[in-house]
Length: 334
View 1 (cartoon, one colour):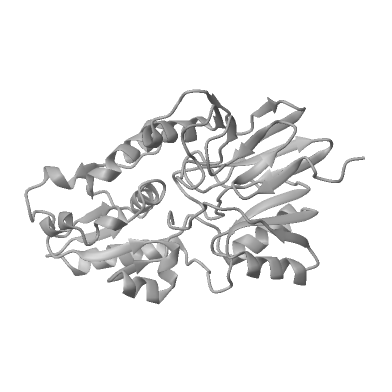
View 2 (view 1 turned 120 degrees about the horizontal axis):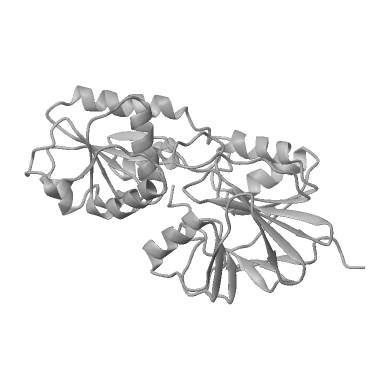
């Protein structure tokens, strides 16, 4: 009799599903890849077959110019893999198209979450708690110090900075996939109806979100505005552009950064951020531990991030757990 869960194996380049001869979020091209979401440390081009949500496949086509061998699987839909393995894609609440993948084989259920968050997000469906035997969780913010504030508070800080500096603009660094669109959507939810101005590198992804039904309101390009004409406005750019020559065309910008890492004051100081906004697309410590309790798996496997603290929490709560030695996963997309 085969050992429990022997059909799924964590290897350095990703999680391998042996009877189906496929990988989940592999770090290099493979014949068949099940992809949880579109960030570059999870989604890569060059696979023979890529199985993902339609939104993730659209993001991969835009970012990595790949759509050959694409098989779309909608939320709640089950795809039969070789070797009598069933794969069901469930919302992860991380970014547009992000999914947990429920794998069922030999009477056992394994969920690979990819990245996820538990906070409401107007740009994607919420995380769906689903029972399983093995729960594979990230641990990006897997330390008790990381407790994200309500996003309404961070939006209030952003709008207050804008109102207090009518002769300047507020320049928000936000990653191009997920964070930028969430900041825009949360500003709209807070009642901000004025145009929001974009660095050109953010435009295509914002338009893709709109094509998939996410209303972002009036978006305009900085490049289309007269130099120095954006006083009192909110401008979004990639983090790398905060101190780039591009920003010199803006009226004395208040530099802001939207990231869960802004909880760490030293990071904000190192990046010379005047207005740190603690806005994360990952679960914080309380959400990680609460999710494990709600899913209540027989085993918890912990991937990229601060594995040690979450592993210790599981041990203290009499939960069987192990840390996986995966490579190629970064935390800079937050």
